Length: 248
Image (cartoon, rainbow, N blue to C red; front, side):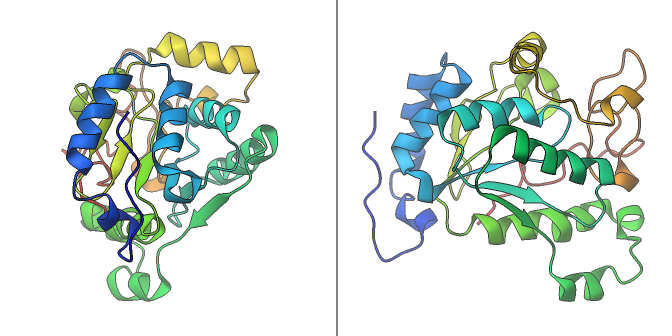
């Protein structure tokens, strides 16, 4: 395994930038067939807890990633983007999972008040410009939250399709190492984690919400539809931007 980046006076993201792309490729080769817990453990060894974060929406499949992470180290920081448009059920689910899994460092990050007053004073930006809404409520807050970290972990899976279908297990996103421990997971793998650990389901799942984001941009998924088809329905948009933008 590649040696951890050496500490310096620059930021963590700059600290690993010299050979990070090579490190990501090496780690991806080593972890290509690894189980999710092995990927998270490798990320922890590579960067250390103070330089690694999990980003979670506390959505319909989030408990699987959080359970595996907690089994490795429940004190790894977890970043949760509270956009101001989340379902109350999602906020309640966050609190339930924190208690159930014993998560020790969940950071709920909100958009800046001054940004909202300037760019979305009527709270209708989600309708007129959803990309801009995601930028000020997700992308920019995540950039602030990730500033101290050299790597991050997320719960995307290849079976979700679209741009996610060919993602590696480890990648260099332009600013940090990005770990995708569930890249190889199947839907059955996720269901097995929930069943074996008796994890609570997201409260909206039984109502037909297979993928849950912000309230105005999330709808129920009809039988036979892709699980993310209820996100930004009727628009070309398929991602909020945190996985398609360099978070520097």
